[in-house]
Length: 285
Image (cartoon, rainbow, N blue to C red; front, side):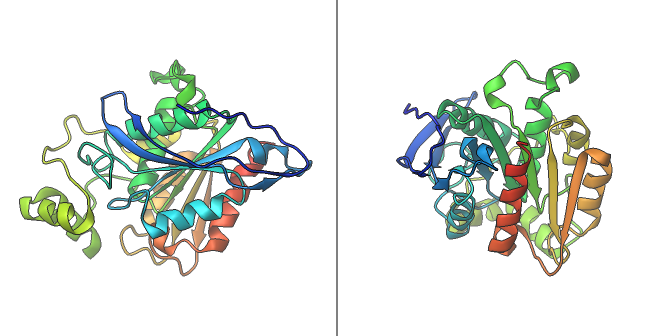
């Protein structure tokens, strides 16, 4: 695996983009892209050149989708970026478990980001990816070892968490888009549509056991900085979802309710992505 060292200087920092297949702890290959970005060193924000954004896309997305590449391009103005396709999506192996085993995919991507020399990692997830970054941070956060997590793997730890358009609880079917999604996931004919219509291969087995829900994960994230972002016109998850997450976070978390915003990457304007990036950079001090 290629390695690089991040050293700020007076010029724009540029390195070579990389694309590779990572391997998860359960043996799935994950299609992954590293964009070194272009960050001009600023003595008032030295942490920007040490920071890498690891982007966790939404369900049926993948690393080559235009909306995922747009997010990566926006974040690359503020730091390096790792994007990847969750299992069952795009060129990655395996089958999607719709947010359960996907935590292992994010672990592999975060380890890679740190192996490339970055001192700080910000995980940014959208929709399904938003639930994954919350559960990942609960299992691999600063204090996870004290709470029965997996802090022994320091390379998988995140330093800041941003969850955009995420559900607070599992099995929600209260909106038409979510009822359609449940049909896609639970019905054989729906999984065929997923495979051939959305390039997403979905596992046929139910969760066993049911994973920790996002709202259960949130209290375990502290003291890692947490930002929850949600649109007030989200057609998938209404505002009780981000409010539940914010309530679970208490004083530890920050909530942005975005006027006029819909759901996930497609609805995240460049201005919002820039503000998210600035927030992540600022968490370094």
